Structure formats: structure tokens, C-alpha cells
Image (cartoon, rainbow, N blue to C red; front, side, top):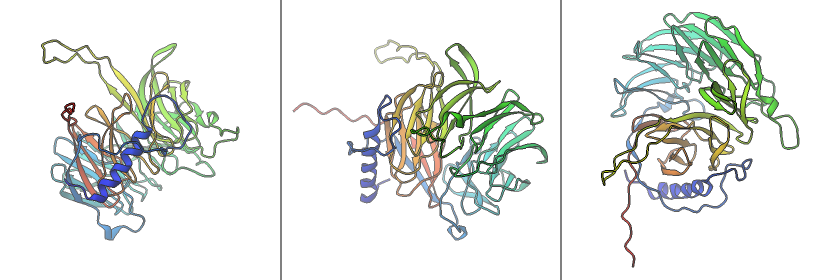
Length: 438
């Protein structure tokens, strides 16, 4: 697809900004995200391409600013996407063509990541109208609606016969998977003062559901009855300004990640990794809440991803030999509109690399084809190498993007703020022929 000259120039300027800030180490870790000197003026290669573009959102139904947030859900078996919109609808989309299959209407914008359940062929999703919906994936017929009285914008989690979700009023809710009836809930008093937009979702494992709240606390509850599993952990205690004053923002808004942490002296510990906006990234012991490590330099983080490449045997070479075996590699990828994109060692919390980014928002990082995909609010879609932070490719689709992409295999999908769904393909990078010496 050929870009207009305006799109091309905008993209070239962005690539310069991104690659000027790419690198390793901890240089200017507390600096702002905007790079100072653009150095690159060409697209690295053609790994990213657009497969289709389809207008989905009904603009006549949008009352506020036309931001499309959340993230699509992918049904691989039936080649369907499920994506919410600011127009109050949840859409089912043909993943091959981008055509709309059906639309379900709610009483408010749908800005969450739906959860597709292949076992029942149903979709769970939340709305700003305060309800969690369960609809049939085949035709969008509503199976139940549970009202929580506050915006739901994080993806729910299924564990056994229970669905867990968190709303914007610092309330964790457990409902019956089959009927939608309330099992239990836990609520905390929201923090007073200024809050960052957004809130944490929940993670479930080993009989515990773990989440974080706007006052900076982290809690673990029993999945069976909501009983507290360990004392509240206040991440705000590690956050302070440079002059020693209390943090301006108390929020711990990242959805926790459950992962094995091989911390020094505590190998193979079940851990939970999450971030405090002012206090950095933390790893806690999942069974007790005890601190395993913290990285207080990576501030302003809104999203985390554990990128995990399993160990694998060496690949055959053209000369008949076999390359070396590759060990397992794991990196915590953290995105921040304030300080950029980070690569963090999940066992120690050490910073592996950091990329400065242009001003504006950045989406949650998404794993795709061994790489990391992110969108930026103003400048486009970018593909990064996860172990070094080097940029592989990027494209400027011509619209602002606030939504996080969804990916499977080599394909990814994201909707622009204008309500246009974009289908993407990640291919092996183009290798240009070497220039012959003059």
C-alpha cells in the first residue's frame, strides 16, 4: 500500500526520533521520553505491512472525543475478532477481510479488551456503563449482564467456574461463569487526590487472585471466597520525588504478571511483577507479598509484558553444520508515555535497555513473531527486537492510535482513533543487496 507524501514525511521524522533514543544501559534514566536529536531518515526494512483497512465505528454514535482504547480479542479457530468501540458497541469482525459480522450495543463506550472463551464460544467484555456482559460469539446474543456500578475497561479472567474482573472504583468482583451471579467482591476506598487515567486488572494462579489499587497497594485474595492471603503491600513507600517529598501519583495501575523469579538467594520463586507509577517496577513473592526486587528508575510505567523465548536447538546451516543451541531468554517489556520503552531482567530487576520515545501515549507491548509490537498515539506502529530494544520496522498509517494491538502468529490487528480497523502482517525483514565498491 503506497503512502502519501505527508504520511511518508511524518514517518521519517518519527523513525529519527525513535532510533536516536534506542540503545543500552541506563543513560538519563529519569529523563523525559522525548529524544533530543533525530539521526535516522529512512525506514529500516519492510517487515511490517498493512493487509486491510476497514471503517468499523459508527461516528454518529460518538458523543465524546473519538479515542479507541482497549484491545481486540482473537478467535483463531473461527477467524474472528472481537473489538469494542467508543460508539458503545462490541463488534465481531472477520479476521481475513475486516468485514463486520455483528454488533452488540451497550449503554456506554466499550474501551476494554474482550475475553473470548473457546470452550463455550462466548465473549466476556466490559463497558463504561459499569456492566460486564457475556454474549454468544456466533451472533452476539446476550447471555447475561452483571452491573458493577463503575466503568470496566480491563479484561476479565476465567478460572474454573468463576470470572474475575476489576472496575474503576477499586473493586474486585468474582461472579459465576455460567449464570453471572455474584460470588464475592472486595473493595478498597479509592485514593484521594490526582490519579492517572486507567487502573490495574487482575491475575489468577495457585488459588490466588492478585490486583493493585489506586492508593498504590497490592492485595492477594483466595479465589474461593475472597479471603485476604497476605497483608497489603504499599508500593508508594518506595516512591518519592527527588527532593524527598511524597509521590504526586499513588497509582499502581499495571495488571500484575505471574512468573517464576530466579532472584539471588531465592531461585525458582513464584512471583508477581507489577509497576507503581512513581515507584517503578517491583517483583513480589506470590505466596507472601515479600519483596524480591525493585527497579525504581523505570517510572511512569502503564503496561508490562513478559516476553519468553523457550530454549531451542540450533538451526541447520547451508554448509551442513548446525548452529549453537539457544538458551531460554526472558525479558520484562515495560511501556511508559513518560520514560519510554524498557527491557528489564525478570530475575533481578536490572535494566537491560531503554528506548526513548516521542511525546504522547504508547500502548501495551505485544509479542509477535519473536518481536515486540507497540502503537504510539501520534506517530504510528513499531516493531522492536526484545533483547536489545533495537527497532526492526515501523509504519505510519495516517491516523492516531490509542488502542493496543492484538496478535497471533504473523498477524496483528488494531483500530485507529478514527474507528478504522487495520490488519497487519509481520514478515521476515527485507535484505537489501550490498552495494559494490566503486
